[in-house]
Image (cartoon, rainbow, N blue to C red; front, side, top):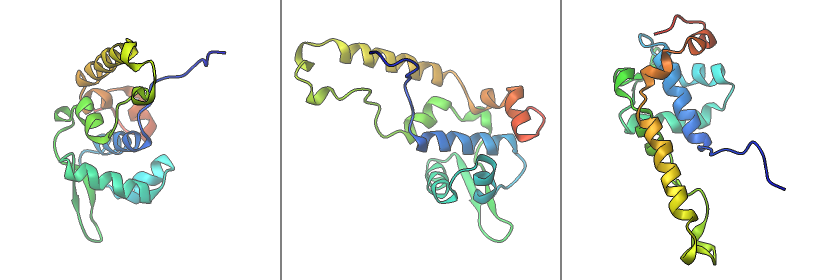
Length: 147
């Protein structure tokens, strides 16, 4: 029986990275604490610390230490490409494990999936964080005015 409603999924790590960037992008003039972001999404602060650290190493966020410290975007939201972030955060884009399949030498599925992944990434590459932030629903979710 085929499974309905399945879709390509990004890792939770990438999901959290995008959530952090969206949150910071929605508050461009504020330093935000990791605890604040974790509360806003109802997710683990420990997981977010790792994500924010990686986002910092990649140049997407910058941090200020100390009692009134926090994190913010390191560059304008318009300069943060969604496809670039996804590529940076994902460590494997293999949709199926062709390496262990006996059909792999004569199967065309790997080529079709590679084409599908390229199309998926091409769509992400057309959008910046600013594009995502321009949505009214996102602003409403944070109780803010749209960017």
